[in-house]
Length: 327
Image (cartoon, rainbow, N blue to C red; front, top):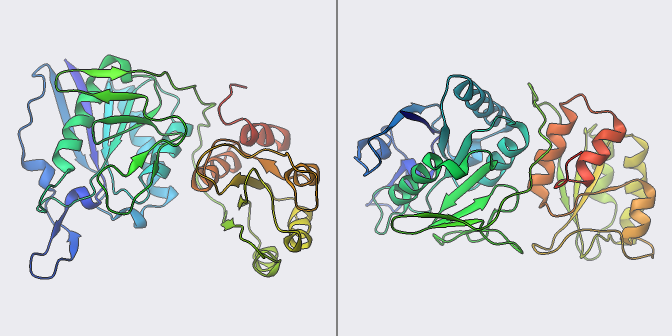
């Protein structure tokens, strides 16, 4: 009999709406525990309420807890894991697991945009869909997946694109890797495998700074004094910065911390193309690492994982600049 582990962590999918005020709050009892779903009787479900947190309260420490539980589950013969999670940081948890879990086990995250007692609540259906995907043979070894709104997305590319729409999770440029129909699960793409880092801790300060027109060195100079461990820069276009920010960038580079650059555009990749002051080509020459194909929040998760592994400087640079290639 196939075993599927369900890990509930909280979020809107486990909340309810106060009908008098319209406020949405955590519930003492998870509403997903009280439904009988039409799942194959040859599957055994093991349910754990490992956390009960709104997703803005999730930190890398909770992500590491989930990673350790998944590894333990794999070692005890569990075939797949479904994680219910708040949507605000769901993509970061999914990508953390994608990078750090090397075991061949189905990992499926899902959530909801509407709480359990709202009209049109999507939580139960998304939960059911996630269970279906986790139980299917094809999901094993595909890395972490996000299943919502009848779509299957790779953790590497999926992102939350709308504040309230139930179809908020999208994969810019690439689209979903699979779809759910009434009776079948259809995979159309095979995700490129990650280099996995089997980390045991998540320490380090890595802020994210977003570039904007007229940006100077004021904020960046504060970071020089803050003794950070790395920095993610969400740059303009293909990977460019206003020239007034460059003195502080150079001061940060002198501290020997890794500076990783992504684009603030949600389609395309960052690359060193422009050869002018602040242009990407010159930023690369200074020593800034370009991380193509990831958004800033996922590049931060990737860098945090790298800093907590045994990678040397050259290995870390390769890991950050080749996020979709095997070493």
